[in-house]
Image (tube, rainbow, N blue to C red):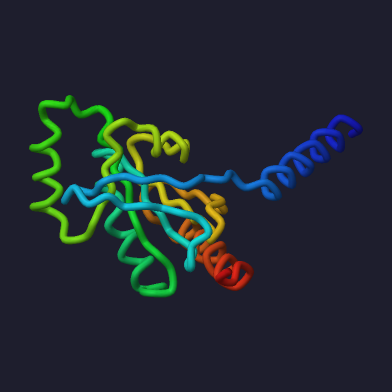
Length: 167
């Protein structure tokens, strides 16, 4: 029984530590598929839902993005980064062209992988990160959209909007 209490106590302390110290992302710049440099500087006016995915994970993004737009529209920034770090240099122009032809919205392309690695994203699945106005990652969900993950993400976004007024 004492061992069980010790384990439960340790888990509670560990959970509190993780919850109280969100990872800080830091400023960054990446070019999108149209070679337009996009800058992320903190603090920002709005909280951000940032999608991060490789080719396989990108197949799970559309339902997430649609639900985010349906619920939040212009109240938050919704953005995305594609991990294209595995693409050889000679093929980069062709890959950018595929992005231009298939997407009407801007997607930042991380050719070196340094920015997506800051997120610590899970390869092969969709990753959605909630970033507060100061650049702290408050929530991360990964995988195909499901009701539980959606509810948890939306509750975290609602809290971030309420608790983090623009500076």
